[in-house]
Image (tube, rainbow, N blue to C red; front, side, top):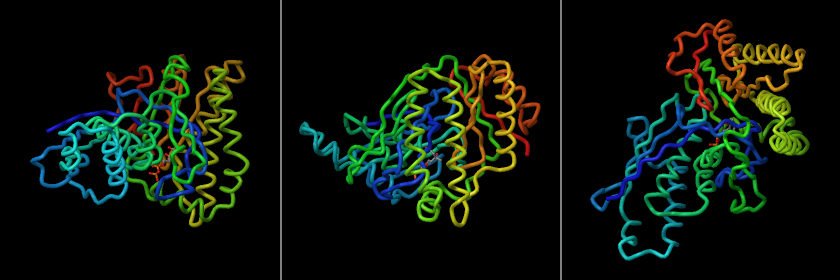
Length: 350
Ligand code: DP6
């Protein structure tokens, strides 16, 4: 029997992946850039075991047995086993490929609430499978076949997912572009406006956007590529102010194309918009004082929860501002205070 346990953190996109050009291989219409958070708080943990005594493949998610028929898990499993069989196998390893697998996976944060649970989950699954089967080399393109955004959680720090040009997806992978401390002392505040399951999942939402939104055509052809270039430049120059503006602009463009879809995909709530307004008001004050390095930025995935990137110097100020404006339904634990890239999760009142 072989057993491996791995943990993978969530990543938060600052230039969003929204839209596929190939649904089966999960190939995106544009490059995206994200920050992988530290392993301190929001992560998935997966244990993979293979054994000659197992009589079937099995899968548990958050303590509940689930079907392994899920084609995305199957794609990851197939690809790992294919790569393992391509390696020059030592005698006993031949059998290993025929052993059944048991997968036990859990997130320590709400699943499918627009908090990037699938990203951490598939990155972790693929990494653990890779370890069990001894697969080396790039795993991001396998994680991508579980969930697009998962390919970015395979790496730490700032990561770029290259959309690639090839039809078979071999050049669609993620690569690290800067370490986690590139913008030193950065904090992340996750404001949980609602931790229920999202109404329209990302996969369905992006399909609808690609099929129906004319604004999406503008994003693909004229907008997001330039923003990727500007973001790369901002990262290279460590220009925090530009990083903030680009992050906010891309989140807003993603939600604009969602709203332009038919029927519209609405992810942000009144609370989300109120958080965004608060950030803009705060930034105006910082700009008027000439403190561009104290700007804060927000980004929203396919849900109402805000993710704020906050410079360490103003993190406590931002946190108390949020707490005063949106008294939390359950007070954050004092031991759980923001440190480094460790996120602080707040439950916001409506
Ligand atoms: C809004 O990776 O969950 O978080 O590839 O269909 O599984 P699938 O979608 P998923 O999409 C995440 C989209 C996003 C933006 C992002 O992470 O870039």
